[in-house]
Length: 346
Ligand code: PBG
Image (cartoon, rainbow, N blue to C red; front, side, top):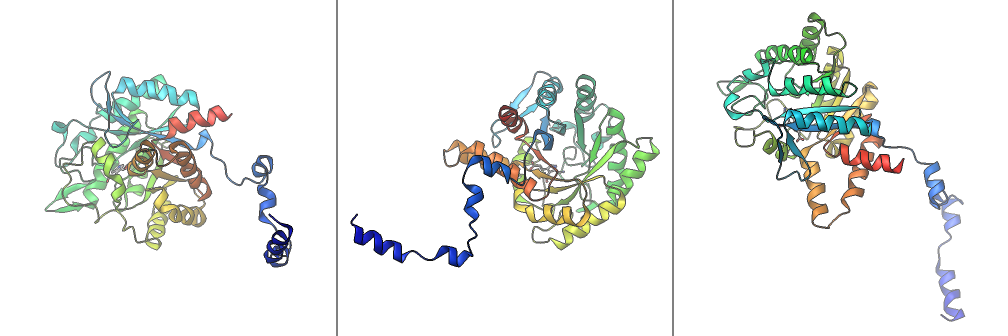
């Protein structure tokens, strides 16, 4: 380039120091050491709760179409998975069962069986890997013949009867060794009722992680395939889950759960609801978790499988986003993969 042209270009450049008053954001970004120094949020293995699916039988490891890398595990395999998770430093697991179809009925009565799939898995995991936390969901949907989270009568999901049933189920899950009860059904009054039931049964140390703000979301699709409710569900869950349009209502709903005695709050789904994570953390200062749900997992895996995104980097970035939004941790199907990467980084 000739000298004249270089001069003209230089003159054409705007007076950036004049514009910014000599402030340049890029100074702190110039090298890896300074980027590390100013980094505000970190993801660690301590932040991960691994969500796993259970299947009846033994030595079973069934793939789930829309969730490559995720399997339904029989109890023996779930125990092995728990061992691996604990060895990687993952603090807790959350279990979800694919209950045999002929055990499902109108009221989800199998949830009250001490020896059901969920409780068997809890007892086996706690016996073999006592150092890992076990979180169990008490919603009825894996147990009902209609796929709803509550008892269905004359086309209505009846609130109070459902609360009675899941409170009893919560005590049975705690008896089996569950450390934290996580009700995902969104019935009114469930947190207080479960707290009373647990305390009456002497389970003062069993915590409650409320699915405080659970939205009526389309992101749950692959989960319903995984636990066999996809073909069963009649209608939708909009009479009990929160409308995805509503943020103020979500905060109010969470406030009730806090008053009723929840120990921890959860936002679900995760990434599309980061504003809710931040709102809950700011409003209550409670331990706050996000559930990165099956559809979120499926989207990342599908795009990565097509070579359209760098799956590993998108996974880690998505998990970090929850920390930035104020979450203390994340329930995620990626937990094992992410923990391996975090441990490699040291
Ligand atoms: C229902 C329940 C759902 C999930 C966990 N428990 C939602 C539903 O089926 O309506 C979704 C989890 C996921 O998508 O990963 N109690």
